[in-house]
Amino acid sequence: MALLPVYASIIARDMDSSDRATQKEIYVSTTGKDSNPGTFKKPLRSIQKAVDQLAPGKTVTLLAGIYELKAPILISAKGSENGWLTLRGLKGAKIILDGTNVNIPDSGVYPRNNGLIQIQHAGYVKIQNIHIRNSHRAGINIQESQHIDIINCISENSLSPGIAAWQRCEYIRILGNTVINANDMKMSWTPYKGHEAPHEAISIGGAHHFEVAWNHVYNCQKEGIDVKETAAHGIVHHNYVHDLKRQGLYIDGWFGQLEDIEMYENVVHGCESGIAVSSEEGPNTRNLRIHHNLVYNNRATGIFFSRWGADNLRENVAIYNNTFYRNGWGRNFSGDPQYWLSGGCYLYSTNLKDVSITNNIFAHNFPFEIGHTSRMEDNWMVEKNINISHNLIRDVNKFSYPMYLETWLKDSVYSMTGTHAVLDDPLFENPEKGDFRLKKGSPAVLSSASNKLHVNYMGAYPADTPTEKFWWQENFPPQIDTGTYGKK
Image 1 (tube, rainbow, N blue to C red):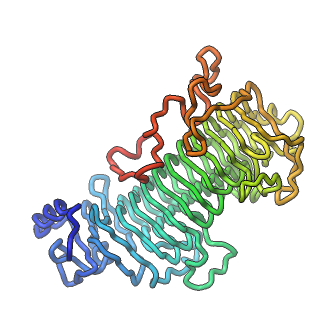
Image 2: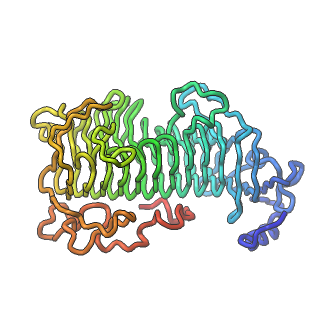
Image 3: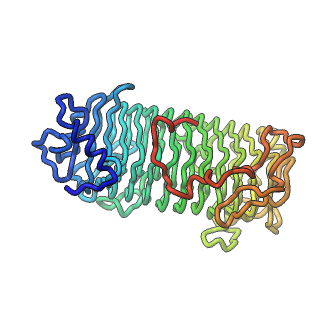
């Protein structure tokens, strides 16, 4: 098999060590044989046979090639804190697992989901540097497992999520992956009976203690990254999410309590709503921190508090230092105020308590910057402890309010600025090219004397942000070093 020079040194090292009696690494190749011992020189052919030999501290390494699978790969072994199990592609090589010929049936119980790589009842498992494509269910699916890392993988073309983690999963890290064309009904093995493809591009469905970071999610048929059900104690940061059919980032309680979620330093554009916050069937969605996100050029609302489902309570929600620019203009950005969702921030639900919206920039959103439903009762901000203050607002709309939105919403919306608003142009460097740094002299740069919030700027980026901090613009996603990532 011809080898590329880029990883020749790695190959040489492996050849020197692969025949040791205490073999810690098992190799698999598209040209291997299952009668082989699984060394580099004599690799196996079956990925599943190699995976079945995993034990604490062991690694299965796939050599370059397209693996046309005949069945899903199941990982159900447990490693240890000092002895992880690893399934990886050889560094520098192109490894593709193709599920075109694999029927992955409905599991029969919620979430009715299995993956081309199925991790179930497993622990201390790492999947790294593998391209999964053409799955008739999920790309990588994690169920009832703990301490799972999905690192620098690609999922392309799947009926359900590219990557998902469900109830009774803990300590999950999804870092540096790419998800393309998830939730595509065309990927159903047989005509799918539901009215839409299941779940989202990356679904965190009830997992606890998780990190979703540095992922690239685009050209998908539904939502991007969804933290839902009874998810808790998780962070979602530095993800680049764009060009989706639905919401970019979503928080939504189901089944029980959803709590303690932080979303920060994500970039979202070209979606429906940039960020949506719901409590569809869960009794309560609480303790959310949404900050330093850039949400721009989305067809619908920048950040939307929905009335979807049972419209249950959302409380203790802090939204600060985000930039919301040019959201709500509709599919063709033609300025139709009757697009189904609109505005920079839309408080469509009244079931809110202890919500603060501070130190953000709302600019050129349509047909309002910050709006609330007419269903709010008198004195609602005091009664619900809603604080909308110290935001910079650049409102170029010329409408009279309340504006009746007669399409899907059937709602009259009032525009508002809150208290201590700065009504001025934020003076971005070059928003048309995605440069949302603040120019010198921007009114979004605060003096220490007037600043009541102990920060010196509004929006997501201070004036002195170096351009290399625009991490999503080049060489994204990065190659993840799990020794340094996973920390704020």
